[in-house]
Image (tube, rainbow, N blue to C red; front, side, top):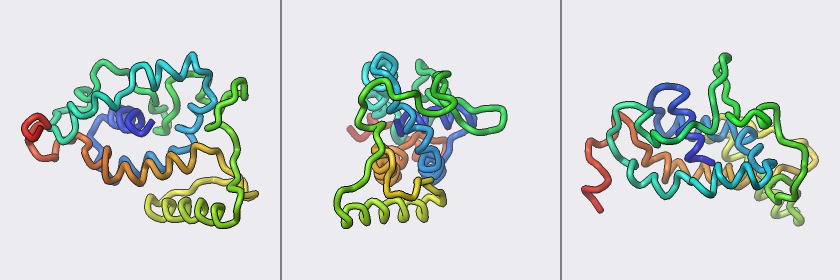
Length: 181
């Protein structure tokens, strides 16, 4: 989902965002990415599993590409920019929010950590990420949260040192990945 976010965001902005901007915008769009957990398998599998971007990303990391359209040129963005400058899913039914629960995806369930120490750990994760990425995760206040939020939060934090750090941009080192393999 984070690769698809970066791809869509670069195409939508028509420029190469840096690592910090990618992390910041990904974190601030966790609720949007979370909506994918409400998709039925028929829509989700082609989007993420049957044609994932991750096995192909190594062809691009640390490369010098002239424009965002050169990153996964055969892929349509999963998220599209609206006239107001916000982002939404390309897939129409997800534009308004999560789909009604038709299937039983664990990622779509509201979750509450069973023990107070675990609940404190999750809250600490969210608070740290909110401070780090200058954003807010809107939680209902009863200790619950969608199960995908900690995964996407942690993924964004790890992404800042992995996939988003290796994101191809105009100002990256002018060498290709193949030179060091």
